[in-house]
Length: 144
Image (cartoon, rainbow, N blue to C red; front, top):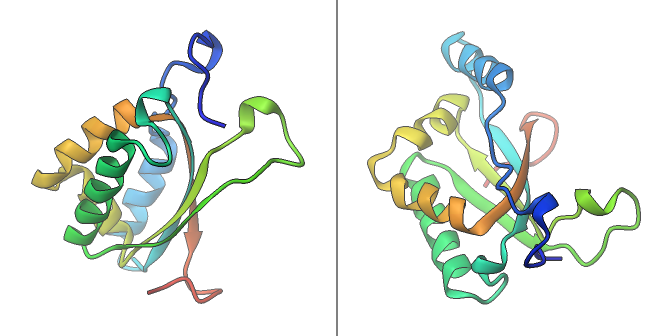
C-alpha cells in the first residue's frame, strides 16, 4: 500500500511528534517511576523507500535497529500489513513494528544519540506517515 506517486493528499510526511505526548513521556522518564515501554509503529512508506526490498528502506531499517540498540532497545518484530478490512483508505499502513525500550528515558534519548542522525534523515525519505502507540510492558510479555 505504498504511497502512489502524484497523490498530493498523502505525499507530505506525517511523522510529527505530538508535544503533549512527548511531555507525558518526559514526565514518566523524570518521575521516578520510569519503566520499559513498547512503541507500536504503524508506518506507510514513500515510493522512494522502495518498500519492502528497496535500498533506502533496507538502509533505514538497519539504521533504525542500530540506533535503537545504542539506547538499549530492540526491534522485537516487524510485519507487513496484508490488508485493512476496517478503516478509511488514508489510514492504511505498509508495516507494523514493535520496538521495545528499557525505559521512557531511553526512548527520548534516541533523538539525541549521535549516530541516529542518519536514521532520522532516512526516516524523512522513507516514511510518508507514521502513527506510534505507546504501550505499557507490564501487562503482557512485551520485552525481549
